[in-house]
Image 1: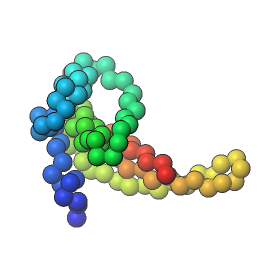
Image 2: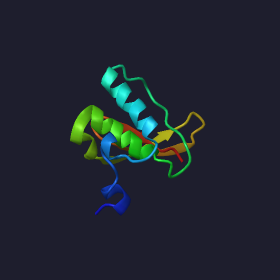
Image 3: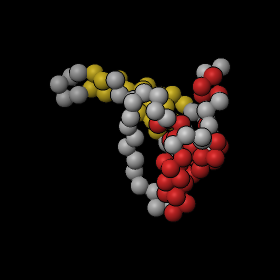
Image 4: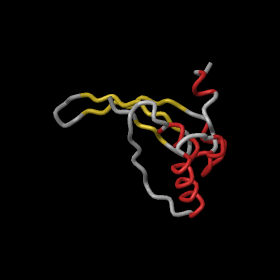
Length: 98
């Protein structure tokens, strides 16, 4: 079962109907083949996840929709334990440190 917002989230740049200049810029980057690393930031609800989903779909196709969740636990030199949950496919990893 998936959330309504995830089920109906746009999957391609052509399905986006807001901030079209950003979508065009990302389409240009994908078409150029010179793809840099990205750090995406912004307020909650600003469309970061949707844009990245469209970007990944343009680069890799439907395979990015097959997601897996993994929990990682690390120990710092001071013996503090840090848990990080990642969500990803064979093509990307999403890290949300808390």
